[in-house]
Image (cartoon, rainbow, N blue to C red; front, top):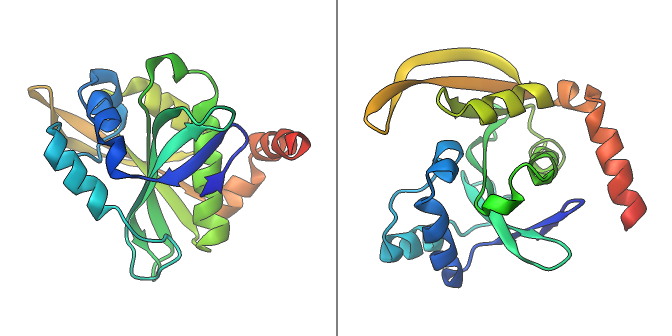
Length: 194
């Protein structure tokens, strides 16, 4: 279990399948979170079973966590790392806030900082990156405003809702993360509450 300022990451459990199914059928959630294979309940349960493993295990290449609010343990979204490449020192970040009333409420920043702390300080990697579809304007703007840097665009890379869209790759190095003014401010508020 990992704890942020307002959120907690915990491993997924089979009992979470119905919550995930509800999020997976939500168009807005799907625009930002692309780590699901199916919206069928049995497939989601199989997916959850495959996400096992400890991020610190050198054989693990992907981990997905359920994100809960710290104050009441309400599930609000998913966060994880995939393509964990320990040899080359990088990992892809994935996240999505499934509960509509929790979007744009500051949880995304908390999730992102916790994921980046795992990448840089728990795993000791050099770089974290996002892949964001061009039709996810909010996700793209949010990542750039946080401090991620555009590293390129793959044209017509993803087929979404009946058309091809571009896929942006956004990266953040450890030294860039440590230089972001929002991170120490956010962590200071977190430490004051604990």
